Amino acid sequence: METTVSLVQMLDARERRVQYQQELLAQYHKPLICFTMNICGPIKDSPLIQRGFARGRQLLRQQFLRAKLTPLYQDAVREVTGCEAFYVLDADPLTIKKFTTDIEDATPLGRLFDMDVIRPDGLKVDREELNLEGRRCLICGGPAKVCSSRRIHTVAELQEKTTEILTEARDAQDIADAARLAVRALLYEVTTTPKPGLVDRRNSGSHKDMDVFTFMDSAAALYPYFEDCARTGRETAEQPAPETFAALRPLGCEAEGEMLDATGGVNTHKGAVFSVGIVCAALGRLDRSLWAEAARVLAEVSAMTAGLTEKDFAGVTAENAATVGQKLYIQYGITGVRGQVEAGLPAVLNVGLPVLEEGLAKGYDFDRAGGGALLAILANSTDTNIIARSSRERQLALTEELKALLAQTTYPDKDALAALDDRFIAENLSPGGSADLLALTWLLHFVTTEGNINE
Image (cartoon, rainbow, N blue to C red):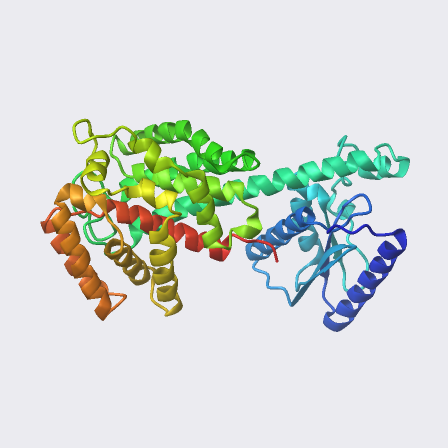
């Protein structure tokens, strides 16, 4: 619940802030940054304001990395009077002021940041010392001091503009982060090595027309598509979930063309265009605070694709079944990736993700933890690519063989995985469906561990 604050509360907060600054200066004798938000009106704290503040802190951390600075002390507090953060740095005050003004001036969101730099003697560093002009008005772009002193704009106008800036910044970051993590997941999938029958850093698996670089080209080409999916999810978040999925279909067709153009006609990520695109749209539909809950993200995937299997296979018979997926559905009732997404990707949520995260927690590297996750997925789901390259009987036998192997060790070592790779290549087997599920596993791992930027 948002709380209005009075002028007296704001004055008290300012006094407390100044006192805290003096205490830090007396203790460290170094310059410090005091970061607050410029929020007009009686409401100084809300989830949207907190997101803007969290982004400001993220930008400061990035500048610290660029300048090779580690704060001697840092602290952040959240009050009804607004969020505050303090950083004590062992650096030249003008150097600090330069990167804080760069942050403030770089984007519309930066106009809401107030990053004061205070010298050890307690005096603030002015922008004019860097030959910079004063802050600009949110609304008209004129000198902020002039607009403020003359009250040219109403509080309501300033509040509306502030909300617009915060909302656009939040959405832009969420959309970009969803796409970035999706591409990262595709790159982690292809570079997890060894993987039986699949393209990796060791070889091209059971494939003659692609290698790890083909997959990298494809992943890079799909970044705009994943952004579009997340943006579509955000723009349709208030609509029924299936309407978001319906809006993705034309985007997916275009993305397949981009993929094929980037790879010279090689189908590297057709399955991922479908499944990863849906997850990106689900992320777009959800508040960022829910990204940390894998089950909630995948429940949104399920809601978006409700009824998909029945709809896509309606009217399919043994006589008219044309695709491998249709034939397997008629003959064995196998629903493939459609059934997976409609059920909320249980192979990812209940198999791949727990195995991957347990392996990483045990200290295994990405290859071994990822390899264990892939084998667990392959042993506990039906990979239609395996069936297409062999038979249903071979796929079932392989599943039982892998279950026996994993009963001995959940995380086979490099030699065991390489031996499996050689066997799969000899039989021309390639678990491409499981590879897509491994990419989704990496994506959910990244989203749940890194996706929530609120502090």
